Amino acid sequence: MSTTGVSNYFFENWAKTYSCIPKLYFEPQTIVDLQSIVCEAHKRKEKIRVVGCGHSPSAICTTDGYMISMKHLNKIREVNKDEMYVEVESGVTIQQLNDELPKWDLCLPNQGSISELTLTGLVSTASHGTGINYGTMSSYIRSITLMLLDGTIKEYSPTDEFLYWLATYIPRLIPYINQFYLWHESTHSLIIEDRCDKIFNFDCLFRQYVNEWAIPLKETAYVLHKLQSWLDENQHVIRVHFPIEIRFVKRDTHVMLSPTSGELEGNFCYINIIMYRPYEKDIEYEPWWHAFEAICLEVNGRPHWAKAHSLTSKTLRKLYPNAWDKFHEIRRQFDPHDQLVNDYLHRMFEE
Ligand SMILES: Cc1cc2nc3c(=O)[nH]c(=O)nc-3n(C[C@H](O)[C@H](O)[C@H](O)COP(=O)(O)OP(=O)(O)OC[C@H]3O[C@@H](n4cnc5c(N)ncnc54)[C@H](O)[C@@H]3O)c2cc1C
Image 1 (cartoon, rainbow, N blue to C red):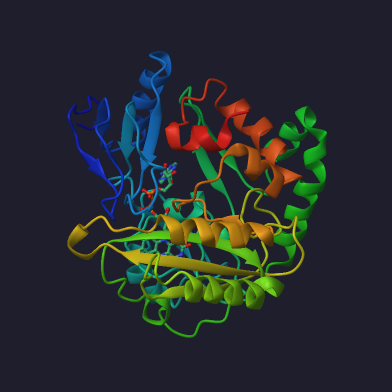
Image 2 (cartoon, helix red, strand yellow):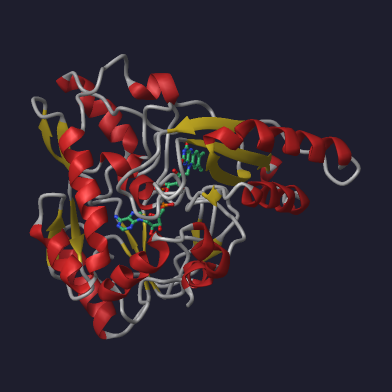
């Protein structure tokens, strides 16, 4: 299976709300395996989706093309205690890091509700923990090694000249790159209190439908009051489940399409609404979702990338007035024929 791939593999996300049968499913054991799969897919013009733990509550991982699981490319390659960074392969899970880092008197500065998630899954979706002094997980990345569709491997970091090379094609990127440098230079050391999984993780109980948005912090009270009024007025339409998760997150200064990125002023509040699926039963959630999304849109809120929102490119472009088109210019350089775009992303990315 490492390079040949299996057919008829059934993929289902954690909540069992989305599934697919990819044309071929792969579990590469080495970078060379991965290179050979990606090159072959590229040559054959096959679609590719990579999957981490498959926990995203949306169809973000599904594909009828090639699906690549990174479960075996999960090594922790280096822990640098003095400079407080760790170099890992992209399939590494938060649980692995939570087990390893305390041995070095280190820990992750923040994390979400559970640890059975890959670091790359978190970073790819700008996932977050909680705390007004902490940005999304994407904001803690110092450098990334990417495999391009032709199998070449490149490292991108704030000190890499690649960013400036990219900016020769898109000069408008330069202020962003400068901002990124500024952030990187001013990053402070972190205070270690306890193992972060002990502080932040909790039992998420049951499979669930979730829809989560980031809203400007100053709109929190307004949105919560509006949600309360809607719930009071619509008890005959739908009875919603507890909890509604409310978390505060620091504004990201250098993550282009982070829902908490800099086009809006101040820090952010994430509101996550949940409807449980007891015994995996399908339950009604749509009216609650629609009302929630409409209220968040009133205050220029932005949906969490991993979760099941209903927005299309038309609205998303308005929500990211400066970054959206720039992001797509870059994306097209890496993936000119949309090989990495599935139906779910197509809805959001179509021109
Ligand atoms: C119970 C539960 C609790 C959660 N708690 C939180 C929370 O507290 N805060 C929060 O913000 N979110 C939370 N989430 C959402 C979660 O953080 C995201 O869905 C995250 O992406 C899941 O990680 P994963 O490894 O399962 O990624 P997947 O769902 O497998 O993948 C997510 C995305 O990352 C891409 N990807 C994964 N690995 C790679 C790779 N190696 N290379 C390229 N692309 C890759 C996939 O293609 C996909 O686009 C929670 C989800 C669940 C189910």
